[in-house]
Amino acid sequence: MISDIRKHLDTIPFVPFALRTANGREYPVPTYDHIYLPPGGGRVVVSDDDGIIVVLSSLLISGLVQGSRARKHKPRR
Image 1 (cartoon, rainbow, N blue to C red):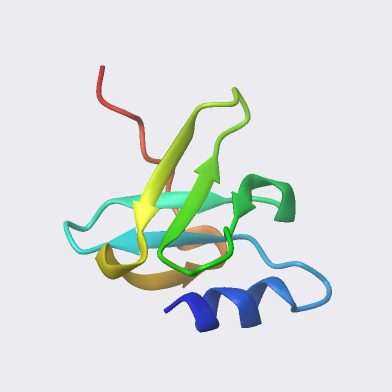
Image 2 (cartoon, rainbow, N blue to C red; image 1 turned 30 degrees about the vertical axis):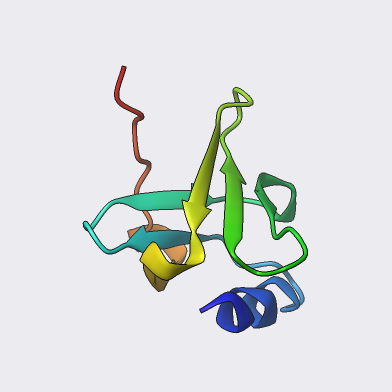
């Protein structure tokens, strides 16, 4: 899945997408600046506009949703 995310990030122009996890939640990536793939490939870091980050295990990411279908996940408090 990490290689699929990297391929999508290399697409020009950038197309917004969301990462879907195994439990069905989606984490939007509206711009290239909202995602970080650390070396090693075990984690994906997604940030929202408020600077709140979510660190996802690459093993729990089940898919990549492109375009307007991507919906915003509100973190639990």
